[in-house]
Image (cartoon, rainbow over all chains, first blue to last red; front, side):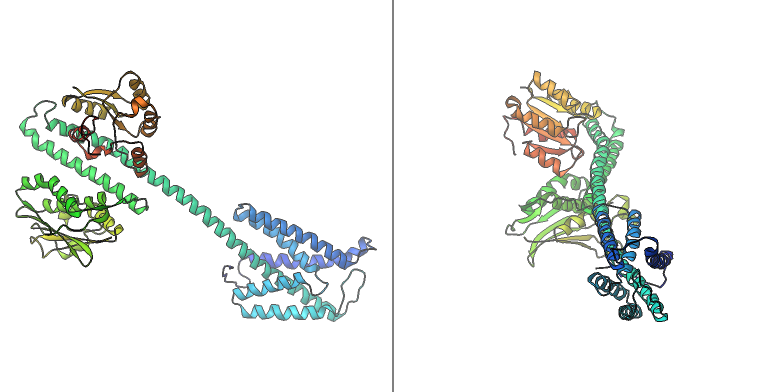
Length: 429
Length: 128
């Protein structure tokens, strides 16, 4: 389908040039045809035969140029160059169709109507039709064949009519063909650009994988050596050094988590996150997480309670690794923001969905804070408290992970210092 | 009996670190800083386990693993891959080559790596 182009007559420099060129070419050619037999002697060929042969030749050339331009990946500039040559030849060819009604004439006439119709310019459509009819009728009233010369005032007037009509028809049919070929060129360019972008995106994703690998190497060294110093492998560190070492270790762990989150986010956003679905028991996952975090809770003297359902729940098809990360993240936060009391985890089946509730007795959140909870730190700001300990990307990634499982995650809190509850809902598959 | 572990790790800082911890934990450690070095070492001695980094200069861990599995006398050595390169495609390839586990280095302290590795020696009851 041709692109809808708003045609103002005359529109831009290009259009004016086109029209002027058409007129000049037309005029020159008419004069040439008139004078040609006086210069060269063609006893055997009549003007019509000459015209038809020239028309055939030029249409072949035009076809070749068009095909060539379409087969190759020419930039817009060179296509315009070819189009200009094709333009000129086509106009000349049209002028040659003085032999009356024939296929090509109607074909281009039809194209011209189409183009005028697409530009929704009814007056131009009517003009083209009327002039086409008149010029064809007028055709029979005079002959401009080389050799004969019957010029009456009517003939000249009708000749002028004919020239203008052919000019218009030529121009419009060319515009139509040009918009079609431009459409194809645009589509081709679009496809090429898309391939380029895909390549770039793939390179970027690989870059992130490699970048995170590079970031992780020094983080591994710090984690390893600090842990080994604390394990007294390098001798007994002075007691005063215990806290600073723990702080370094904790900060480093934060960096490691951040790099993990960045890698995850990059993968999710570029659609390269691969999930491995397996039938898993959520109770078993939660139990293993609590086993891992029980020391942390003990250190703060708060309890970790798991209220398991009386009957073992069905297994659920999920990416165990990702869901485990989400639940660990939430329970870990709950422990961090609770100073007394404890954290309770409940799990049940409700409305054909798995529902996990993690309730803490910690600092609680305002409605404002809850609304920004699952955004990445680049968007919006929550209370200072939420960002200082660096939840950072954790909940943003958690939400993404739950989203790709077609689940829901949200939080509620009765208010500041009244604790909070996080809810995770996963459809049973 | 002291277990011998071949650690293939191109980052010297990390190689030294793991050597310190593993030696302190009672293992005999042989270090290789590249796949080529590892090949040479394996021509002279057979370790009880190989800890293989995946992202290595020149020949990478996957290619090393492939040639390892082709040699019958070396194919049965348990291999634990460890790397900070967390690429699902690479992981899949490694598991196809029968590694015991693919650990992300930043997830574990050296002590924790030892705990993991202990379960994969040939005569121990392994979980995978």
